[in-house]
Length: 350
Image (cartoon, rainbow, N blue to C red; front, side, top):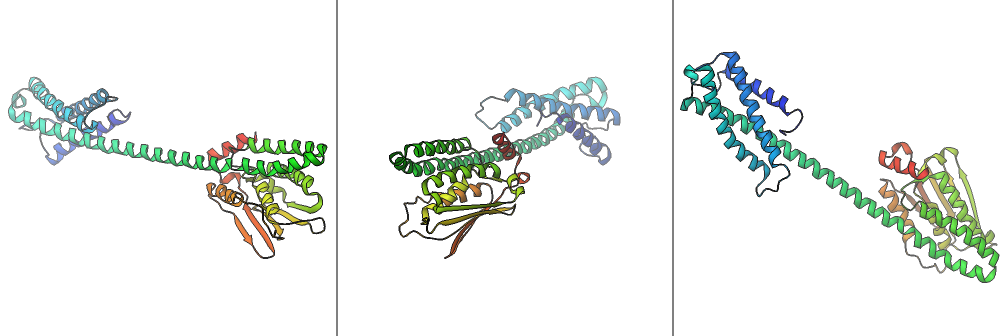
């Protein structure tokens, strides 16, 4: 506190208050007899600033040193000794300047010591409040930083699940195509590499624009068309304002993959999937055609999406009815984001 750029103003205010207290309220005197107001004011200000300067010097000297005792206790102990020396010097100096009843006497020394000690105690109490308040803010900042790092680590863990989840599901298809149609397999591999590049590019991003996500989804649907031809049918009905909204990357791919995993479909009985948006929510809905034997599921898909929205302080809605399955995703407005998330999203878009 003593090194704060405005602390000398506080010392001046404290000195002025002490003068008013002594002069008008007949408070504790500096001498056994009364003293002229102007001389009293100058003397009190000089003593107050001297005590403040003494503590400031001590604070600078002990800063950065590894002390065996608490720095506040150490500073107060040293300042008590310094105040005694200061009071002794003050009593002799005022005696030389004012002489008479203001000369050095034991009583004048005790009165001056009592005053400077109270000033010193008050200043050190304020310093202790300032010290612990600073420590409280530092701890709160460290706690918030640790919380942010923990959330980022969890988000990174959730995002990292996308790569193996997507990659291994397509290797088996590519293996089959290589033996059936080498040219089609090559086309599949090219599209697969583009999609995987997109996933790697946005691995560390919380959000991307819906327009970019839809472009990615269309490439993924091209893969599914190669695999299943006309057995899968997709319809997109998105309002233009929706493309300006944000969405976690690759969530649509995960949802479509979830539909493919849990439903059967043939050319005679194709599976229809609709993707719609009203500008606030994006809905993916399909008529349920449950498989009798469902492929192995790690449970990552929907849980992954739910976790990623939870990090955004939002949630998804799942409607699992006997005849249909629907997932509703909130579209994130850029205006509702924090400045740090807005910068990160802007950087990833650029």
